[in-house]
Length: 248
Ligand code: 6GU
Image 1 (tube, rainbow, N blue to C red):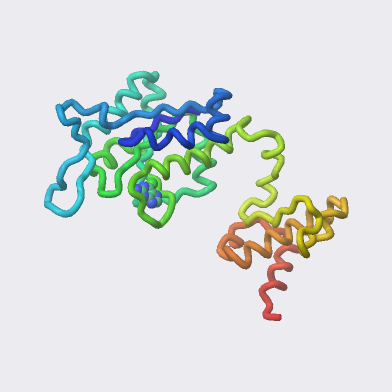
Image 2 (image 1 turned 90 degrees about the vertical axis):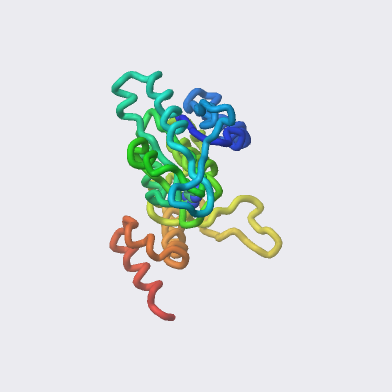
């Protein structure tokens, strides 16, 4: 999968790209990340990327021309079909909310272009006539879309075949889809006074499975009850929830 990132701060990506999952995915040729400095698509002596807002007000607005030209420079390298189908995602707090489902949806594409906005604003014509999608990673305001782009790419690449090792992907997420993770333990079996739940040491895989599923449900009910509305639960599990909801 190929990512083209349009940003005023390409250097922000160096740390993440040279670490852990990103680095492995890139070095194995599973992922390509191309960084494009929006400033390189200006034509004036001062390499101007922003300007005052029409109508007045605080802050500067990113100019449309360098952003359009940067995206168009990607398109000319592609076949007409690919160029026309290229998703161009504007990262902005006004976008649709990012989630695991959106990550799964985006992971189906071969190419994604990500435009990192600055919080003051981006000329509206970029939204209207260039972006095909707008995404926000949460209800808070970041200085720019760069960290959001890294979050999104991280969530996408770990879904790509071959990026996670077999140990990691063996952690069956579909099993707990829509629920929070169950508690995990490793050695020692007793740390200070705190033992690992006995069932996990029992070797009884059916019991372990049932315990984990129940713990995931309890945890979700306590912390994120709204997630349970969408989780796939069987009758017995619905009963567990009804029981847990009763005041003791
Ligand atoms: Cl995508 N950009 C900015 N600037 N702030 C955000 C965001 C994006 N998502 C949440 N906050």
